[in-house]
Length: 464
Ligand code: URP
Ligand code: ZN
Ligand code: ZN
Ligand code: ZN
Image 1 (cartoon, helix red, strand yellow):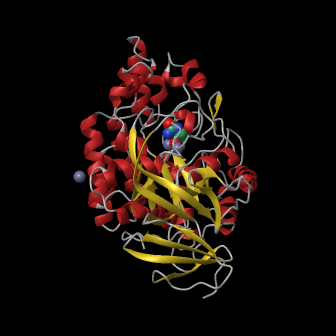
Image 2 (tube, helix red, strand yellow; image 1 turned 180 degrees about the vertical axis):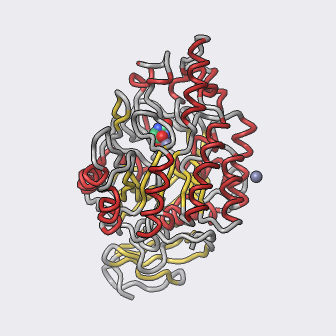
Image 3 (spheres, helix red, strand yellow; image 1 turned 90 degrees about the vertical axis):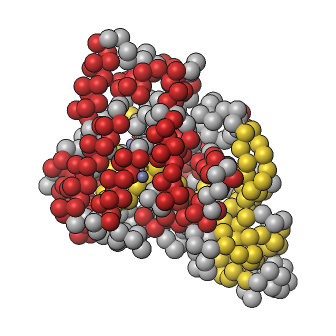
């Protein structure tokens, strides 16, 4: 068997199955999954998985790198963000190219794409349309042809990135015909604006009141509207960071009617609740949509088990404590978002696989295979089947460890999970057949990241 490296002695976990197997790698790609003990040519590097799980590296479908919003820019770049990603077992990130007012979506996307080479792992990119003009269809055609078929849109953040319904409808129509996909943040901005105004009038607009300023109804209303647009157009649609069971169920019901509609949830909405806004550091948990009440968090998390949630992202947004504190008295001008690219997989594995019996195969489906599928990256990413890039997370499922920001690699000085004891974490991580993290230490810091040109996204309600 041709090989330069083999990972032996582990249990390979794929989206639909798991089995003891040795993973043979040559030229940066997987060439075979073989019976344990299959001989390798002399000179082959052998990595002993020591009984651990051998999973495709995670694909984070929602990761903001050096993101500017309002007066704030998140603090990482491709080198920092992907270093943190690989320590957390993620080997592909999907970043966003979000135009500032007046910028052309395609210009921003091509500029952001050029940064991929600074990464320790590969990346892909969501473009973003905010405003419609006659040049948008040609820009979208170029972006799809150049491997950027997914386009982020927002129904909130008025004056920044919010798009109106006409723009959403037109963009969705064009992308449907090009093999692209609208990925959308749904929160009805008029409902939020009104809630914020009422909160501000009664002096309740600080970070501790975050939950009241962005009600669950705003999300449900906006999801319903966008689903109606997608259904009438027969266009696919992917909802980012859905934070309530009601929103997930609207999407699942549409899928049963034949709409290619999908739900992403993010780690913090599945684990953390809005009680944190009543704690000593509420600003560290300000994100949109906000954290929800414990009952809502548990109701959302149940949908991981039913199959109704399609992917889990991080919505990584790397602000530090000083940035978060600087505007804590007014959520309307605060930097929104939580750091999470490094903790996404360990937190979800611990909470749901180790803690609540979610099958490891479903974990791989939610965090690697399905993110690759919905982003046109499968089967190059999100699987270890022959032909896939040899991006491999060798995962110790039983090690217990305590999260503390000083031990993490993200460009910030806090983590929303500070002090949590977790079960399971990656031990060794390979990117394109190179060992980048070994026994928890950085083994290869060379930036060899590539922008992965995504294929057309042709989703049906069954996903495949
Ligand atoms: O609060 C969040 N999620 N900030 C990042 C931007 C976005 O809406 O995804
Ligand atoms: Zn968003
Ligand atoms: Zn339900
Ligand atoms: Zn986001």
